[in-house]
Image 1: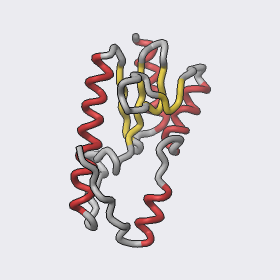
Image 2: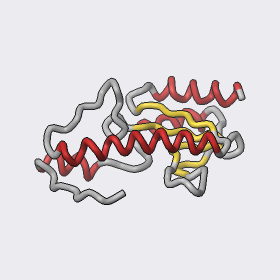
Image 3: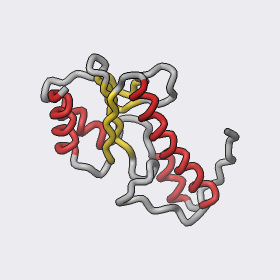
Image 4: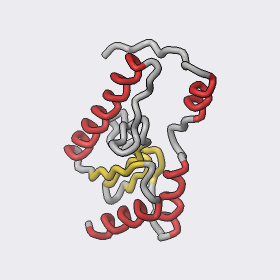
Length: 140
């Protein structure tokens, strides 16, 4: 898989937006973690549950073998909110498609390694996400 040259940002606003993106500790992640911690759950943060995989989960319950990903609507092409950029489309289209493909492959490989993967969108209510995680952890 060859690397694709990153085009320069189309505007100063686009540049600022990209620079402000965070890999970890996003608002939705912090909100879910805060609620889970308040309920007594303990977890690892930004952790690679399967050493052979490149993917790092946002929240990991190691003893339960559960990995939680809170996916950004842009980077993971949310069906409800994603809008393909109009500028540099030749760059963005394959890059974002690879992200989604990598997500599906990660889910499969983690399941093969005995891990349960939970995925949520950044736009989902942090309370609803925390409730679902807590419910699913107690159900196992």
